[in-house]
Image 1 (cartoon, rainbow, N blue to C red):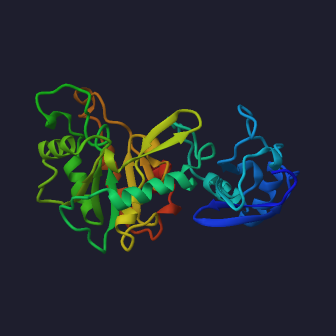
Image 2 (cartoon, rainbow, N blue to C red; image 1 turned 90 degrees about the vertical axis):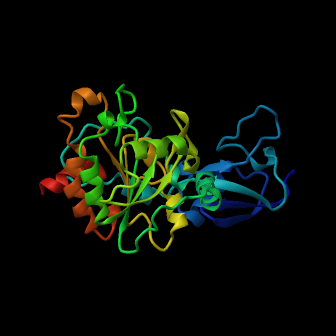
Image 3 (cartoon, rainbow, N blue to C red; image 1 turned 90 degrees about the horizontal axis):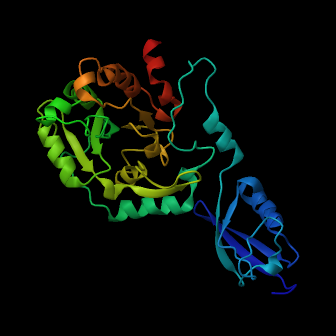
Length: 320
């Protein structure tokens, strides 16, 4: 490329940003500073996808010069990154909330702002377009959205029993009947649809006269994301449902209850981690998690914006 001028187009969050008339002596970090002026994403939070050095085996660093890169005229690349203000906002926690044990089994959103990454958002759009949802009961417009996991959330799938009812979490039907008053209920498991259907029928959920289930979602509706520490993992993006029903549901009126926090990566402000229900024979006489969630769901149903609620501290709202 020599010392000639070149223009590069970077795509970020659905928008294109062009850096014009770049000289060969321009460094990668200087490009990042120009992108910062356009996007407000600081250089340290930027990841430029698609840049390669001319010399094989050489890694691209902030000090790499444009003249050392493989670039074409008006080339389009992708930038990933989150604005500093949004990262700080995601970390804000009220001072008056009680301390709780942090039992994240994956990196925090500081380490992995997955819900902002273009390649993951593109996967969600493909699921919206391609995943077929079998609707049992059409969602009601005046109700909010409640998405429930199965394994360890509603059912102990590891213990051995003569029938599934012995492994059902206590107060399951009372919980679902109370939730149905204010929520459209969707069951989403990281397993196959045959397993979901069989378990819901065995537990008496599918055709229960006291509540209705909108639909089941299985593992095919999930997407794969990459974390810095653990590599590739599967997660449940509520954006799939939001894309299917854009006029009904959004982050302001949706809640996903699951025993794994990794399933909240693409919907970080809409997840409530439930205490896992395991060793059913030992714990079913004392487990009251679903029963205790009933008043919280009623409280939540009165809120106009769920993103203002700190779901890690849901019990504190009930005490108040």
